[in-house]
Length: 101
Image 1 (spheres, rainbow, N blue to C red):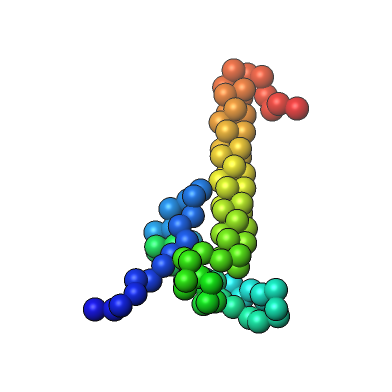
Image 2 (cartoon, rainbow, N blue to C red):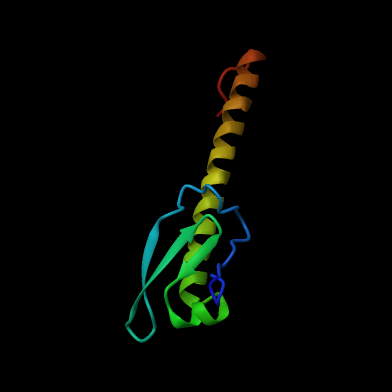
């Protein structure tokens, strides 16, 4: 049995299990110029820096998580808006009002 548990930064806006970005590794440059890797797993984000191993989060993983959450949310809103627009257009056509302007 391992002495230490693996730590993960859990996203707040989406469930990472089965997410389209699981397995993707983002290369991040730290403030001192060192290169780190942040990966999304089924359990959350992981970074290979010392701070993440100690705390379970770091500025690298938080930055990547923020960007992925924003991208995921923006895509969701865009898809939802497109779906609503098509349904509204169909309703107008059904009423004989044609396309909306």
